Amino acid sequence: MTTDSQAMSYVHGVSDTPLRGDTIGQVLVDTARNYGAQEALIVPYQDVHWTYSDLYDRVEALASGFTQLGLKPGDRVGFIAK
Image (cartoon, rainbow, N blue to C red; front, side, top):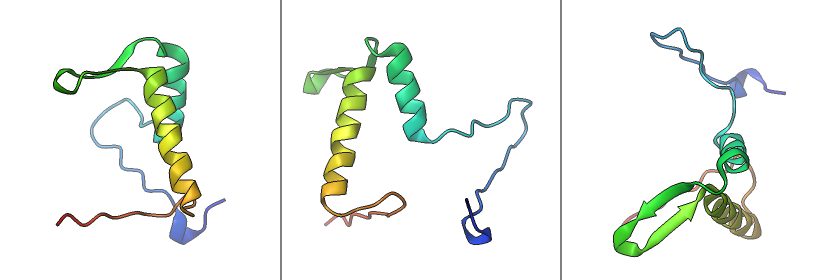
């Protein structure tokens, strides 16, 4: 349930294709489920070759770490570069 101050913004632009209503997290879950063994990220100079399943696992580990730090869904985190 959202209040007026939490209402979602929706700008469609010039297209006949509607925007997806899924969160980024849900899109990652669906993609990992459907394409888990396929390559998602390749960074040759760091010898990184992650499948969608690998990416999902790492995102879950990061989210778990944020939770352990006390962050909750909806919290925002900023970083200041020095």
